[in-house]
Length: 183
Image (cartoon, rainbow, N blue to C red; front, side, top):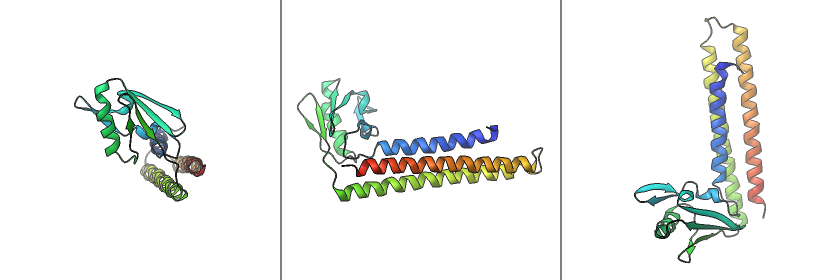
């Protein structure tokens, strides 16, 4: 791959990986520990991810269990989950916190699929913007030691790269939508 294309390829890769991590935080009726990724708990004055203050596991398909390493953190973790946008009320027995995920209604599933498609569209727009930036950068090479044929070659390669990422994004959206609609 041409050195000038690597920068834009890396940007597109970051866009795609960002989309996948956003998809990981969308709950699809099954318990997925990644829904906790963005929730921070106050650990002695420092915002810390829940995974770093306790053991997080999924004992059942619709339950996440959090066992804090420090018992005094129990209340802080419960509070962090309650104020988050997770929409689940945690229960605890003094040692372990349990998050029970309710079955999603058909309407909620459709709303989640719309959200997934919207995020996918946003990622595709970002990829197209990267392509536009790349093509602008290639056009600026006119009049330099780079031949017009080489510039055309770069633009064609950029279009192929864009098409590949758009296809990958569509595949990821399709897969996540299927996962959400599966009861």
